[in-house]
Length: 121
Image (cartoon, rainbow, N blue to C red; front, side):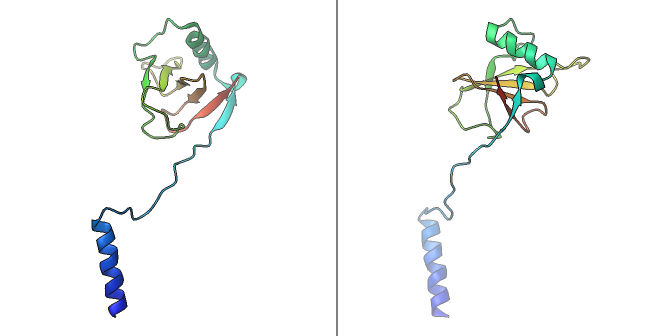
């Protein structure tokens, strides 16, 4: 009985002292790839427009992508930019995007940031 009390008090002291209860490894992001040929036509067109520097059809294009869901490799704020991949017949921007990293990597999502595929060029 004394041992269990001692263990409980020791755990409480560590908790109150701010010692981490569990140490986590940094999250490693493993992404599938998609080829240019597998992108929808609008995705290929958007990629050409990005590489040409515009003009872009939406004012949000080229803005910072925060990666708040942490589905892309973790980088500093401002590392990623997002661009709309229009969907024919859609009345709004839709869910499709190309995300560009500062080092020239490209990612595609068709489900509004739930999943990503790295674009293999």
